[in-house]
Image (cartoon, rainbow, N blue to C red; front, side):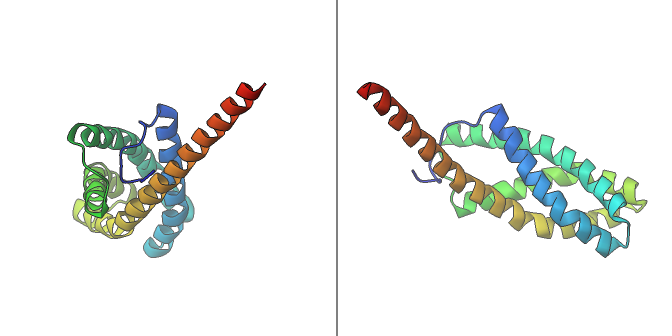
Length: 160
């Protein structure tokens, strides 16, 4: 099974697990880095990253569901170019929500918050691309393993 071809639709449970894994790793990487870069406490930046993470999880689920529907409708493969477009669109949509939140939370202007967000974007673009690509590759393996296990179980039942 090739991860660039259409695979079975993701359930709500899988979408939630995908979003939690994505955001959990993002918080673990970004909160300490922000605390160090902004000379703020880890609690302060951790709370901000948790709030941004909550927004991002909701956006992640909605955006990826729409992107999956577009893929099924238009029939494109998820090659490198499509993955870059996917990551760019996801991050641009997130900027609209996070810039005002960061400006308020950090008591900075919108321009400063936008610059900060651009800095974070430089981290999150490759992170989003890499995480989702790795997830898709692993998902294909999990689906193949589950299908093989189902066949073995059915075969074992057939021999009884």
